[in-house]
Image (tube, rainbow, N blue to C red; front, top):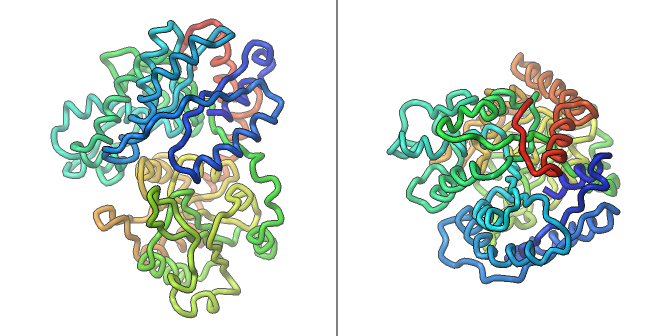
Length: 459
């Protein structure tokens, strides 16, 4: 959201029109709070008219079903503080831009007569599904995982039930109930800003624009302004050991494995991964982290000697590097030696991979990642999806990984098509983000609509 604000303020027509104030809800996780603080400091020193205001702390909810339930309740409890901040503002408030899980704050915006916009950080396909979810909820009484057919969503190919987002797989959970709620509340916003671009997700964006996802209610204006990527964050990472190792590898020869800030694997899965990688015969750079037993379950640095098969590091030292802690992901994806990316299909990671034209091997873990993996393979053609045993805890066997790696990195026709499509999307992104590109045009339209207090849904 802040990266979009930075781009908005850099528009010639917006520079003197707007300033941005970010209302900060303090994360309950101390580790996240530390990262949060350093990011705020970096943005504050950017020279742009972006300020930050800490909202008073509230006690986090204790009785929750899952992440979505916790976050939605936690944000909802800040409503009085958001209202106080807006009413005490020394400058007129042109709009209130809300996070995906902050749809309850629309009440505050409406009460004060301030236009509200949703910032949707995931795909247009996920947005189409979210807006259509209340309709699906009424039409399909059984669990999605029990369906024999497919889930039909306007603008999206028929979705196999196994590819539905994790919170949707248990209709009895409060996580699911919140998504149905958010899907309804989004319709009350003046507009929805989406981290995607037309050339990538034409089908879902057309369905949203035409109002096919919710025929019974007008759809807010849709602004596909993506990809929103903080490319400057890792500019000092060129001396990282992983980058030095990549410097010695042939072009497009290395498979990069990384699963985001929350992705981790236990010893049984790690051993299968090691066997599959070794058997594939391809070069690899593997960011390996293991689960934590702590309260917030953030991954911890891996003890390689405990989780990897005996002798694995020695046998693969000429072709592979296993790194047990954080890596500069964007710098690695940008390196010419990287030819493929095994990813959890988090949307930020997916966009980063497309930005650099790197094809993907999808290994979704949680949230909407299963839908993202389906979309990357079936709709866009920039990835190959691994068969993940969702009922077995997301397990992937060595044989399946080996097969996927060979397909992506080898001479198969499928691999060639995926690599060519990834390169095509790399060029499409550059065009969309440039002046007169689709995303740039939508950003200009967003600035104009906010300045005039209106919204216009058009291509």
